[in-house]
Structure formats: C-alpha cells, structure tokens
Image (cartoon, rainbow, N blue to C red; front, side, top):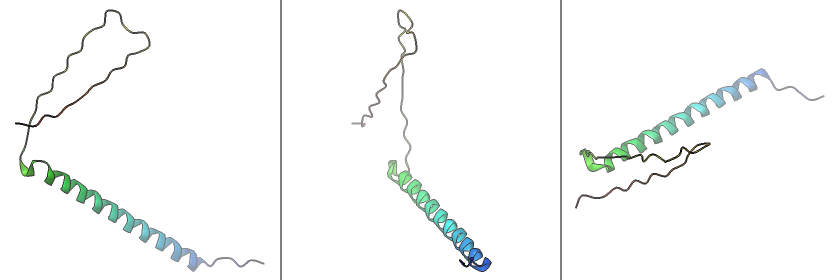
Length: 80
C-alpha cells in the first residue's frame, strides 16, 4: 500500500509556498517602484511642460450604418 504524506510535510509545504509567494510579490513591487522612479527622473529632470491639443470632427454628409472607424496621429515636436 502507498504511504500517505504526513500532516507535518503538508504544513511545511504550505508555509514554504506562502513565503515564496510573499517574497515574489515584494520583488515585483520593488521593481515597479524602481521603474516609476526612473520614469520621473528621465522626463525633464524635475521640470514641467505643457502643450496644446486640438481636435476637429468633420461631420459626414450621411451617417455611416453600423459604426465608423478612424485614426489619430500624434506628433511631438521639440522646441527649437
């Protein structure tokens, strides 16, 4: 007959699983915080910027049946 796994072994495995899950979560959160900090440091180095966006919607002569599609393009120009 096959021997059953003892309760102590199951408890140890569950505890190890919880510890590994917590450590993995902490590592991921730490990496996300590092990415956010690097993103803010590379944009303007503490300065702020602003911009202006305009959008003009030209009506169609006849409404499209079943919906419409479109495309938007954004080009960021440097200040020269």
